[in-house]
Image (cartoon, rainbow, N blue to C red):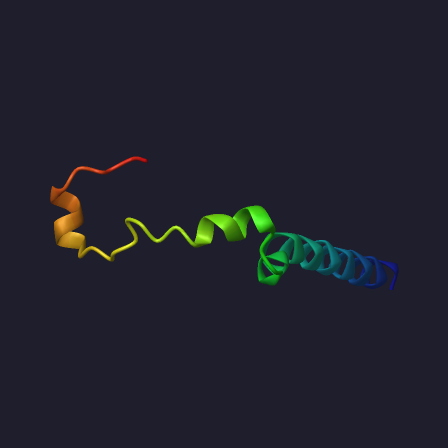
Length: 63
């Protein structure tokens, strides 16, 4: 029975570590953007969608 309880404990530990990792990677994305990030969001220059076929032929413009 000791092996079954060890398996359970390690499974729960792995789930906790996975949950913390998922929160740190994906969970914090829903927060309000900071002032620095929000200031750049008003700049709409160069955000026109381009079809994939046209994007392959045109050179990339780097700001």
